[in-house]
Image (tube, rainbow, N blue to C red; front, side, top):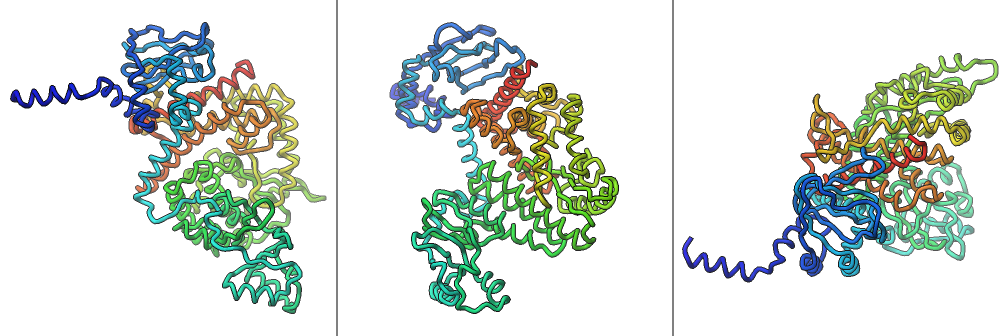
Length: 640
């Protein structure tokens, strides 16, 4: 290099502000990479650099209010709970602490110790609070950092998928954006002829029947014209209230397209009223939703419900995978996706049952088909097997064994048909074709009573998913009575709850003391983590335990946790963090399944953390910490 080049380089170095290296470092890490440049520069100007030798304590629990905000520049820091030394985790470059103590103006409850020789950027509490006021992004991160990181990760993933799924509008479109014209209405006394004339004039396929204050009372469609007027031979002078579909489904203008699609798909309807403060403001049709989707949820749902044979159902099952990939790119939340997958799986199961009854004949006794496990919780992913059963009543003059013998052949046909549709037979034989899962109402109640009164932790480890039961086909009355009996018994049986907690605590989140994560050490999944067993199950088990302890009827994990917060049993902030953590792990599972499905590979729940980007690793680590907090709450409540 010549002297002129040296001189130019020296000049550039002199022109570069002294905080430039700090800014460059900060911009590599969340949340600083999303903050305004002036706020990052301000932060860089106000931090100092601290050094901590290996094993030196940086922050000790107790004592005075936390005074310093730390950002790890180099090295590693271990966080430890003084009460539970096993509850330790590592923080790495770019991570911050102790945010909770600084926000709450309290002493920290965690010991932070340098694992290696470590450098940290340090910001005083006064400057930390100033930055909170300056930067909305920084404040949002500090007050709900897991949710902020999760939103960042979801946006990144959507951007990656957008190149594969193009030309689609987001299913998060509010309904008010889909209402393009005032609704066409008529009074209940309007004649069928006048209503049809208005429909023809406006070129629409439906009309809303409303009172003079625009409160919707019913809907009349061209399908109603055929089935209720023409076939029935009614005079066109008949008032339309005689043939309308009453109590029309409605959502507010702020509801989203995915919610409308869910309602239409579950109810089997093609039109939905948009109602603001009781007044009709518009109508959304399935055609409006088709414009948002290449694989339409409503259309797919309807096709499943009317599939003529098993081969058609098998083909439609593949569209479920396409729809999930599309909706991931469109911005659907994990909670929405798992519920939609479950909804479509429900429809497939019901149609399989209907086709099986049509082919083999209905049994002489009525039965109710139950879903357990993830389907019972409405949170299925693309990888799911069968967990189902039957509950029946015993007619006079027969025994439960006689009824069971009549139902088991049909149950085998249904289980095998579901297997053909892509829902593998349960390895643990939790299926309706197993005599132990095809029981009368009193037999089910006795079985639950044995688990609750006499079950060991080993028994409950296998039986816990039965407590997530939900009806898929048949009358719900027997299942309602069964659920009520189970909740009465569980809420008053402390031994059972303690055993259930003991069973749940055997499955620890995979956080390591030396490495970020504990991974499988051998076999085909060496260096990977089982996201279902080690990730989502601590949340599922915890939510189930707390729900059974407090008489909460919900079966969905997020719904159970939200109900705990509403009842004041767990704080809302804790529940928010737990739900965000659970949703992120579910998101990783869905993303893994989608990638494997695209390659034609078998689906599994394993992820190698070394293959994740820095942001995903960071959120996954925080998600596992939240799983530990759920388990700590269980251990504390039941003295384990």
